[in-house]
Figure 1 (cartoon, rainbow, N blue to C red):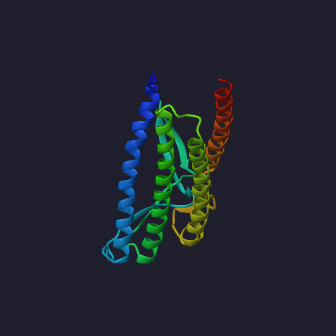
Figure 2: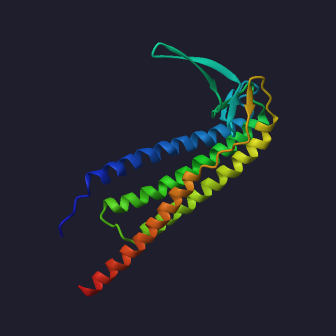
Figure 3: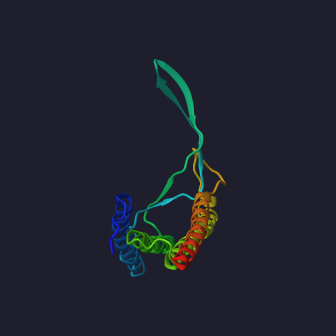
Length: 209
């Protein structure tokens, strides 16, 4: 039986996925260790955390742009930013640590399923039930990640952003929803149904031989 060598691009994706998966496992172990240290009060009052601010901000700051020998008046009007907690209180750090762990392990799950899928494709097993199940699991996992992100950022907005006060910055109510994750989930769901059609055609072809 002749062994069909997989395309070079599939091999590259396979090995890249392998590296990413094991790197994510190390990140997951780090997230677990970080949470354990938080609950044992290892950091005390010296923990300095940076977190994505779950809302866009408007700057009340004007400046000058020097371009082509001209001076143009400009103003910073909108941006996404991070928030730095000085001597982060334990109750904030624990919530952020738990959210970080959930996201990391959801991503590990998604990469794990994709790793199984691309491994089968590399072996020449493309239109199989296992691949279809993996694609569907990835689609469901992406929807779950999107739902968690929406709930987390909305809660974080009411918990943190609404209680912030600055002199030169206005906190808006524009919370990100990352709809691109939903579109990706929809694309993979459609891809799974394409594989279902491919599997049926393969089975019919095998029966006619």
